Length: 301
Image 1 (tube, one colour):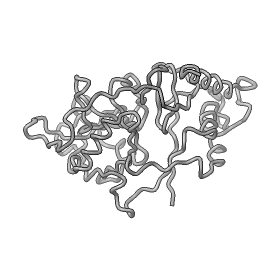
Image 2 (cartoon, rainbow, N blue to C red):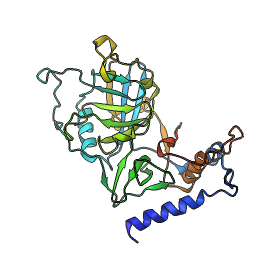
Image 3 (spheres, rainbow, N blue to C red):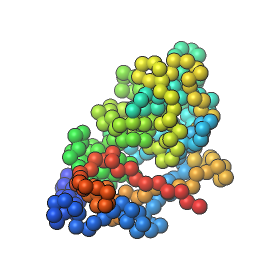
Image 4 (cartoon, helix red, strand yellow):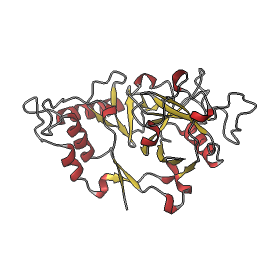
């Protein structure tokens, strides 16, 4: 069976799973609370510490998971920057209302800017990848930006069957760039902290997502400059450090698991979020968008 046929079949099967007897309430009467209560240990995955970034701010820690399957060269360059402590002592440079928080070197003079060390000055634009070899858990959605949407390796993705890309959902981590597509290198990163700006899909490299601590970014004062950039040093929040998860001391690690997105229980979770059977809902909706589904994260002892 061709890749196209597989995706079409998966989409049809999943759509059939969502058919409701009455057209209003789903026949299984699934609720999110009920699905979460049914989870077993095998439904969770432990992120690879080598793909985690710990960003320490004065107000707390933000933990991000990188996505090398989608942006291998950019992720490798980010890891080099982190290893050589490029970000330590830099600052949050931007907080754009209902949009993004961005960090990096605020110095505009290249002669005075911090050296990239052995990291590349530019990285190739990894706006999408080939779909071959990628297992996508497809969801049924009338998406405006992609023929197919779903999840792969725990990340939200869009696809036109031949190609697949990460989508600009809340909490996603992107590689800032200038006008030239290859002008980013991971030395300035941003996190989506507002609505999902899906028009950016396939225009900027996405390299991961925030797992915990995003509240330390969303509450930052909004920048007073154009596009939310801070205009004075006093406005900026300092970055104490950014470390790779496998270099963090055991006592400082955040022990977390992420709900797997390649299981039947995740399909049930999506169904429960699509057809809202909770008593509070008058209208069960029966619709979902990929950015409405954020795979849950839990702390473990």
